[in-house]
Length: 109
Length: 114
Image (cartoon, rainbow over all chains, first blue to last red):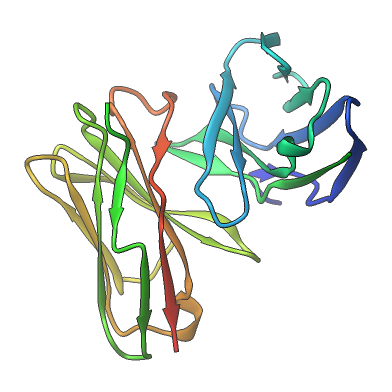
């Protein structure tokens, strides 16, 4: 079992829709969770992080964390074609950050 | 603040050669982590350096090594290159105060082994 799991996608949504990206993790000791966006050929850039159960909103992005279910999600409202990228979920592991393999999001005009 | 910088950006090597990659963290950051990214495996943790000491290491063979200098700049070395070492090598910096703080990535070095 991978430590951080994501559906590889692609997840296809029309412009203006809500994109929902999901991630599960296996280490109950994980304390913080991060969402990074990676455009093709580029390096990951941080979108947001969350460490408390519940929702955290930042503009069009909402991260949701449920530690009991070991589940993290990222919602993107009013999706734009420029949101098309691979989204990486990461969780703190034992003295390191563990990444999922990413979900590819395609937003069609 | 200037971001994380990595040099070179692209490298082509042949099997058996060795390579050294460089990473300069964000000013004030003392932790540098290295990752290998391949299409099949995603981002794999190589090692992390903090204050010139390797603080953590991933599951990579001994051909992969690194070091950190007193100015927090870090180098990563891969000896006896194999075809499977072709990948994007990313470094990320953070202050290093805790493992749950944000890491900021450099642009990466794309290595092709022929």
